[in-house]
Image (cartoon, rainbow, N blue to C red; front, side, top):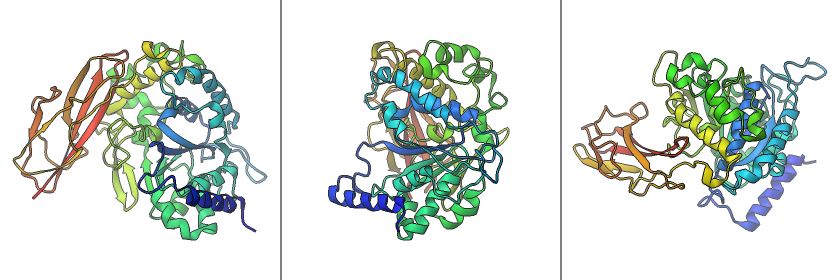
Length: 446
């Protein structure tokens, strides 16, 4: 007899074939990135979830799944519980989210309701570290999403271990082996460290064509428990007591008030890079892990495997180079929880005239214009054009008139086959100041 997940998947296949509403040409009807979170409920998971919920309008959220890790598990008849927080913490956060939802939709009507999010909460494989023997409601939900005919990527975020994700993939392998190639094309796994062995022992062996991004301790650690040792004195001001009290903890509604600060300072959000990576800021980090963005920058370590580039003592840090911007952005989101549209700040819209991907010739002068950039609040804008030389392959170039909205330019070096990543950075004059970007990639032809 077919399992529940088999039956659900067959129903989805029939519905998709009848409706034909989502195709490869238009993979996602609402245009949003699709995400599933798996979490082991650690303190930094709970802190990350608060920020995540404040950005819930940015994605199509398809699952909020309780899982385990080598640090936290529920226990069963063969395993004693280990530092298990339970599952009620997420329910309490969603209750607080429900209270601020009427205010959030003043800023974007697409924020999902708390009830919509509650339907996405499932318990996955939580009994012990690496548990993946049994199917669970959480693993079945992940499998169900991956089996849908919608071909757009699904970002599977492992805030703890990857075991519930692994169980979902094993279910597909057992019940629908003919779907493995199609599922491999859409599943994108973002690991916050290896918090169990299921990625190495199962996923990468049985699903070698699934993209896996690994954020290592020197990357996510910059905003985890030991954040202060990674940060400059100037940057720490955006994580210390005055910033947190004034912008997050006090006067910004019940969800922000639940943030488990330590001595009123930033606590830890080691898991936040997994979703910061897929906030559409204009940096195009979703397109290629090597591009870099709020969630860090990665280097290829295999055909479908990338590791974060950060190592001790190496600057600039691929996450912290954006930290002032994403902390101010979070502070603005906190205002959205309690203020109406006219009294809060909203990010500018950075627009580059012309293609974002250009073929250029050695010696060519390339000009850039951002005349289409706007701000929803009518704030004045400043513009900066700069080369993201860690992400490209060309030598350092000089950008002339780098602060001009319409007259920036560069001369292409004689380096055939290499790329230049030019970043447009647009900052508004609001409070707090907010930033958005566009990345232009120049490929030098022969």
